[in-house]
Image (cartoon, rainbow over all chains, first blue to last red; front, side, top):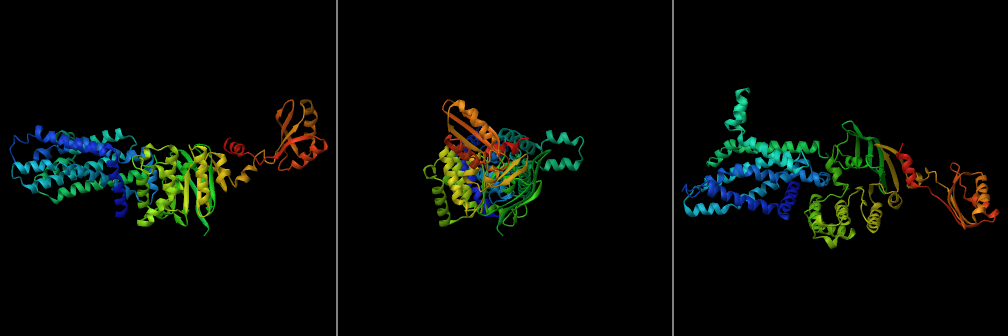
Length: 246
Length: 315
């Protein structure tokens, strides 16, 4: 994979977010909802603790709906408008296109996340939080967004219908959030071997996200998210290669 | 080393459907190859395989010696492609879009600006450079697609229906552009407009049901027509003279058949079909002179491509 080509595709994608209302709608809704979640549902003030856990705790649920909305267009739109034919007959590899488009979306969520900085300012104004924990929280949140996006990218590659891509991505992401929950584990524990149940449980976004959010950046949690992204992007590339003309 | 594009035993199956069935041909520099065929004949599928978008089920495509499967990037660098319908990112402006394609094509700095400038002038895009592609008319969208395809001055140009949906003036412009580039490039274009073959192509391949059914210059294709070398004759005469004129024409040794074009009070007009490959114009004109007909029109038909096309592609 050649970074120059990935970079050119990333730039094009990212500028295309801002050329349409997508970027602004996404950012406004994201900031609005994270505000509501943090201050009303999360009882930010009433807790009177100088940390951002009410803010980060809602991120998996916020991402569950917002990220698939961002990811659904990644490939479905290229297919629908026929630009996939243009893009893939330019001298770039499928891998460069897949990674470039994914990175653009990931950088974009990074921008949206960075724009929540007033919350960080607020908590620093009101008290003396441990900023390294907050930074770890941001990192964990961004990594989790990347995981959601990689899943969404793969599912978007399957269809030219964005609504279908959205719905399926939400369901798959929900499974990844819930896979640590008894609801899901009970379904498997009846018949599946113990190692499988444990594997499923270890796939949960929440387990790894919460671990990073505590401020302990364990290499295993980082590896979890990075391999998750790599796996889904690899699957995206294979799917695109297999059915680019469908 | 003159052969630029070589297609050998190319096949494409979609499930049980055979879209392209063992197609082979070569195209050299300076040739403008027109790909003709009814809708669904396999034109676009073949072009998609040449440009590396579709993977062939069997067979090879090589460009300048590079194989599309083994060295796709080397092929894609040398190739400009206008996909069917000229897709482009709708939310971008032509300026931004061409900038993107130029960067992907590896053009940089002053060279890049110069190429973009040249291409914009060449396809007349300067008036809409800053408008989103979404809002452009069909003609302008097509030009954006063309601009993108020729931006890096490729050796091989593959154009899928480059004039589809354009008005006559725009068609003329696009054809002039293709002709101007023809000398130093290999150009493969698909069309179902037969006049286009005359206007730009030096060679035409007709495909039907995924197979090549004819390959030759437009003139060679026309020669397959029943109307090849047929003579149209119009004489100024009254209707009752027709009873003398018709038998006189049919008596000529080279004449196979007479088709009535018009018979009214003042004019008689016939299309005279020759027996296979005979040139009958001399006979006909001599006959007219001997009988002192007042000839108003006498011309030789080259053949009718649409008729050839229909015979070749329907069974």
